[in-house]
Image (cartoon, rainbow, N blue to C red):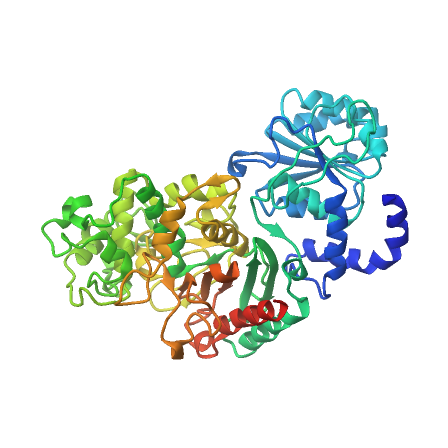
Length: 610
C-alpha cells in the first residue's frame, strides 16, 4: 500500500521534495517558499509508517547529547545530507559516506576511523543490506559501540535484520520528509507512536514496537503549527527594510511555536561590503542577553540547589563587600535592578598607557583583543574597587545597571569555585546539546562564523570580530556577568525552549518549574522586571517588547542588536540576532522598531491561524 501511494505521489511531490531538500540543507534559511501543507501531509503519512524496534534499553531518544561522540554513516540513502543536517540541530555529528570504503578500502577501515566515536547512526535501505560487509560492520560495531539503525523502504530490509538486536527506526516511506522525521526521532524532536501493523518474521511480529515522547525541539514548516507560511512573509520585508536603511548589515530570525522551530532565516551580510552572507549558523555577540542566558541561568541552578538565597546580602557571599555600601544589598534587589547601583563604571577611557601592552606576558595576561593585553589583576585592583566604592543613589527605584550582573558573577563564582564561562557550559549548555553558546568564541570557532561588531578606532584600534563589544566585559577578559556570551540562534532556541518548558528539556529537569515561574514573574510594583529577566511593559504606549506580546512575556535585549522573548500564552520563542553596531553604533534598529515589528508579524500570523 505504501509503495502504491509513493508511486502515485512522485509527480505531486517532486517539486516539494526538491524545495524541502534545499530548505533543510540551506545555510541561510529553514523556511520554504511554499505553504507547506503538502509537507505536513507527507509528515503525517511518515509518522503513521514509522516504527521503533529493539529499544528495550531505551537508547532512543538519545540522552546527554553533549557527552556523546556521534558518527552518522550512509551508503546509498539519497537523502543523507538532509538526515545529517537535522541530526546536527541537536548536537555535533560527523558524517561518513560508506561508499568511500569499497575496493581497496574496506568497512574495517571505516570501523578504525570510528574509534573516537561512541555512538554510530547507520542510514540503511534494502539495497545496502544486500552487501554482506554492511551486516559484518553492524555485527562488529554493536559489540563495542552504541549503534542505531535508521531503515528506509520496504519490509525486505527489515527481514534482513532479523538477527540484529540494535534499535531500529523503520519507515516504509522514502522521501526527504521521512529522512527528516527519523533523524529528529533519534533525539526526541518528534515522537514515535505506532507499532507494527502486521507480522513480517518471527523476530518482527504484529503490535511490536516501542513508543517515545517528544522531548526536544522539532524542525518543521509553519503549517505544522497552524500558521500559513505566506503570513510570515512580512518578516522578509522588515528585514530588507532594516538592511536597506543600514540599521544593521544583516540579521537572523528564529521562531519556535509549540516546541517546533517553524522559521529560521538569515538576511544580509556580516558587513556592508557584502563579503560574507549571514547564515543561520552564525555566532553573534549577545551583549546584555548574557544577563539572562548565562548569569541568571546559573543563579537559578544555585537557587535550586539551596546554595543561594534571594534574601541574603552581597556581604553574606562576598566578604570584600562588607565594609562598603554594598554589604546589605539583597540578592533580590540586585537581580531586580533596584539596589541603587549606578549603570556602569568608567572603562577603557581610564585605562593608563602602563596598564596595557601589545604583547602577552605573565605581567600582561588578559587579552582584550588582538594586540591589546591588560596587566595582571587589573579587574581586582582597579575595576572591582571602583564597583565596590561606587555610590548608591537610587535604592528602591528601578535603574538598569550592568554592575548588578557583575556582582552576581562574583557571587556565583564564589559559590561554585568555578569561572562562570566554564560552569554554564558544563552544567547547562553541553547537557542541553548547545554547540556554539559560550564566552571567548575565538578559542572554538573561526572568525568568519562571527559577524563583527564595532570598528573601534578610538580605544582598541580594531574591528571587533569575536571579541566582546562591551568595553567593561572586554577589560574583564571577555567573561563577565553582564556581557560576553556568544551563540547562534538554534542554541538560544534550545535554551529558551527549556525555560518555556519550565526547566524541562530532553527528558531532564534542569531547573525546577517553580524556580522558572519565580524568576520570570513580575517582582515588584516599582518596575516590570523579573529576577534577571526583562518583561512585558504594562504601559500600553510603550508597546514593549511588541504591540501584540502578552503580559506573560519575558526575555531580554542586547545592545549589539539582539533579543529573545518567550511568550507562554502563545507557547512562543522569538529570537532576533544582529550586529547593528557595525561599523559604528547606530540607533536605527530601535527607531525603525525592527525587532518588535517582526515579532508582531509572528503574532498576527498566529492569530490569523487560530
